[in-house]
Length: 319
Image (tube, rainbow, N blue to C red; front, side, top):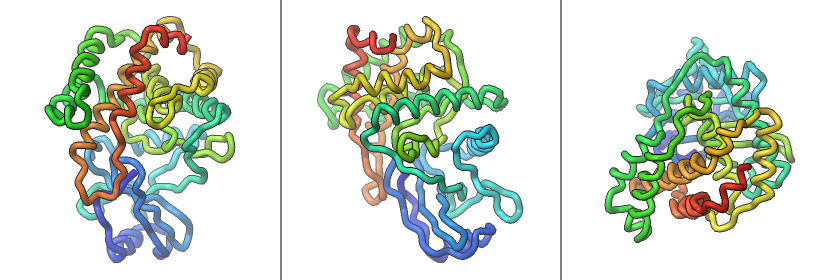
């Protein structure tokens, strides 16, 4: 979450008259995240999240995301629905941007997850995959291997301004993944961004899975690889936590069987996950407007994860 588009109190109050949520009491921008503009809104009836869609979110994809969340919520998953207005519309426009008023879920995202919390996150990811198995709509992954090449090209010489070795690391890894990316693994609907800040928890219970704006149809095990890279290292990527890794993988595998082919491919998928976030963070580092209410994230944090996954002796962690 972040704030790129400023909304006045007058415009916010007028926007809320479309809904049966009572009058505006307060609202504030949320600085975490990098993709969309988000506000925490409080009205006479409760709390809500207002999201204005920016940057990488194609408005054409919004019905997919909204329908997917409705489907998962109907299956009992703890996900936030987009609220319909007085005329039954879930998708709106505010400040010239597509917008949704979204349910507020209780819980907090954990900065330093415990083993029990990592296991719960792994189990929730598996439950998401199972709940989405009969979801009919499909969406290609807009952040696939092909897009990593595009981001690397767009970053160009500026990669070296972040770190002198970064261009060589990126280009050598792209060449490796072009040669080794698996093509025959099971596909499903995936979240593709299940970082700890996209999982809400109370104690060791998952109370919310949020920010589905990269969700798509892609390799199921890649989703686990993304989640592994997000949960099992210190924030700067310097330290790998084997206990968190085991907990996350065990939580997932209690619900979804991974066959030998998937397990063998996990180290390649994890390298791809680490490169994907290296590149998206590098692109945002270079291109984030100076006046945006957003916390930029260091791409080198994921370069360190990439270096860990590249070491052949570390492939055993997925066995």
